Image (cartoon, rainbow, N blue to C red; front, side, top):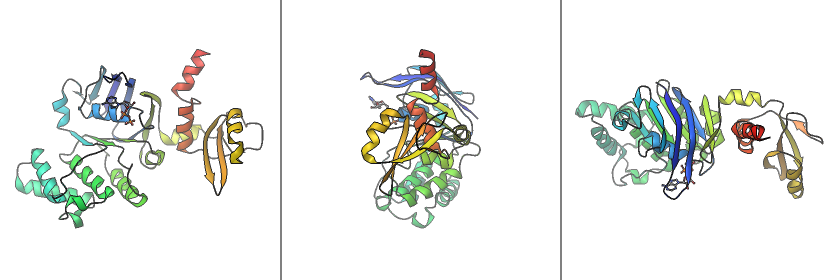
Length: 301
Ligand code: ADP
């Protein structure tokens, strides 16, 4: 089942245009929607979760018209929003039982089996009797996944799930996600490039409500080979350097400033060619060296 988003736009009442003519085709598997804060990711996620409507455009999950027939999607949707509340004085097992009932699993034995299987799957079995108020951020996120997975959704939406997690929790959480989604569409929105490079077979980069690039991460990285140049400079020289070169990122390394520059040919000066990473794809698309922004510049000139 494919998710098809066609020419979707959305402007909020305050005049902010959060999505501009967004079109994406999302096959089963893990798909990453990558963009900075304010790019429009949550707006799109809420729309796919049928919580708000587009001003224009259409969304289809397989044969289901998501905009016209939201109830049909809700039966087959799992949504882990950026922020969700839990009842702190209830255990994970109790609350999951309750949500399973709301989801329509009325047979008590089946409900118990489903809930137990999910608690195992998200690795909360040993702490299932603990109150949710005592859970860490990572445990809560994994509980959120268990809730989202109730009823075997064909579309699973996870909005910025790793933002507040410490490194160990993040790895555990990403491992959990990677086990899902062979048959269903799993859409992960994030501003963290590594989330996408570690997990997703396809991705889109979004900024200011516009899709800048749709790609397979490994292929996009391959296409950057021979175009990323690296140089170590003094921090004090950075401003001058940025005026002279198309800098895509800077990073401190052992007290020195490492600059990465985009160029189809070797820039003049003391640069070394370097192996590209997904971060280079992301920053190059944002800066308009590749993708939609570069096409717009080419058309204008
Ligand atoms: P992201 O999830 O990528 O951070 P959002 O979809 O939350 O982006 O926001 C996109 C833009 O829309 C931002 O400029 C944000 O301030 C604005 N926005 C989001 N929600 C609302 C809302 N309910 N009302 C008005 N503006 C909003």
